Length: 440
Image 1 (cartoon, rainbow, N blue to C red):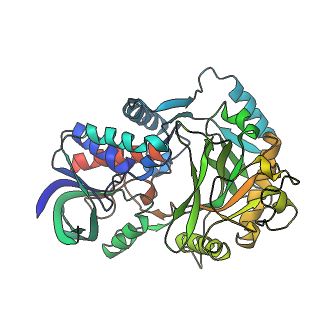
Image 2 (cartoon, rainbow, N blue to C red):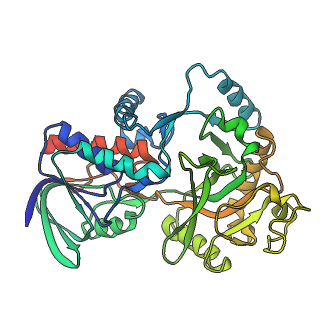
């Protein structure tokens, strides 16, 4: 059994930046464990960076102030922007058009946020991960290693029982950082429950992804690559926001076994004629059902059932008329549907049949407001894909070092409810690393 000072579960941005910070602070005997042979979490998907304390994390949840958040963002930016394929795509200094967009959004009851943004594209993801791993000199990578059980054997004494290439192996550590990402979030929740690590259910985001001919959105994305519009709906008072805009991007399907979800990304060097973005409704639950995971998965499974094993897509022209989209008329020139050719693989159908009515009301109200800000969004050819669901729903009460109620166990990243994106995950990893360094 090999001994370490720190074991990190997960090799996404939270795990990698935690290891970078630990090495900077002088620690050694560090290892990153991941079940996949070439993992890196969200770093492999699109590579969009938002440098704004209002986007991607909650400073209250992380127990930091704005000044500290901005200082850490600068540290992260220095590391990531040294990667030569990472390019700035939104400039906020000296951009006089931003004030006009803020004012226009406000007129229609929306908040508009424009962060400084950088992007490297899905096609450069592996090179970015190799670059970050190359920074680490004292960290072991235990890849293709699946953690089967966590054990607390005493104060500052933890053991990970693992499977690697079908063989059992174990590792001991003085401190453990769980940064499992979204894909490992529910595995870690089960492990946390077994170890009596306190946790609770947080909100999830449920919604759709729009794909439209990029000419309708270029007037906005030429100014802000990934614009952030936030709505509070008049009927229900719920929060709806745009998320993950991809000019010249594509729509993708993510497989979760017994259901599939919609997502989007963009390449750096190869563009499509379309732009896509998510529109998502934040949903929190109370008694008698507080399990937002179960709620979100049931919505996803309903779409999977109605779509014959695929998500569903619908033309705005059909949605407005209360009819389902069909294969026969999906690219009808008579109805101007040829203006936007689908890049995603989904089943033509009726989204409103599977989406809860309150969420559908919120999304449609917000879309109509957005169409007033950006005329053309609701062109008949625009595609609505569903479901797009973001699970950030398991939250762990922690102290200012992101240490749980079990001393020596820390959490970070999206899968632990501490962030919603690459920069936020990296910040949480740095905070946890500094807490671990104090303990070790």
